[in-house]
Amino acid sequence: MFKHILLPVDGSPTSAHAVDKALALAEAFKSAVTLIYVIDPYAFTGVGTDLSYGQAEYLSAATAEGNEALRQARQVFEARGIEVSSAVVEGHAVYRAILDAAQAAHADLVVMGSHGRHGLEKLILGSVTSQVLSHAHLSVLVVRD
Image (cartoon, rainbow, N blue to C red):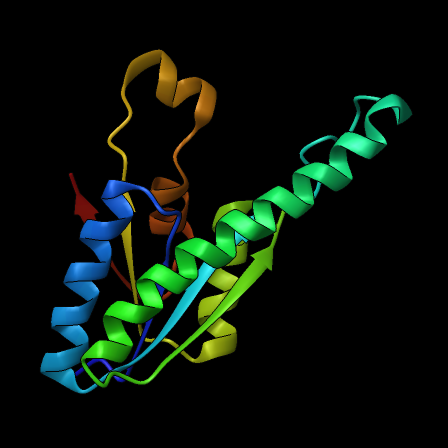
């Protein structure tokens, strides 16, 4: 049913639950899996040139964090013989980077965790998952804590 699953990961416990669900689906449907970790390369936009060195440090640290999250998730799939690829992806709008990666990979399912933020925290931080759901043209499985 699902030939290719896109799985955005962030190293969180919620993301680990999404890895488990995607693994079960990939095994059941013999699906290929693409793992991504999205970095906002413009996190320091508008804060002035004094922080340009901070931006370079941020990008380096975020890339290292992303590679570690991808390595951990990749091991899970490789241990079960699932075809898996992975990449750190840059995108100012994280939801758009996820959807662009799904299209580029020809994915027919996105499996992603939702941190379940509510109230003011959701208003301030937004919800990548809800943005993906509202803009996706493919199936999306949301895994909750």
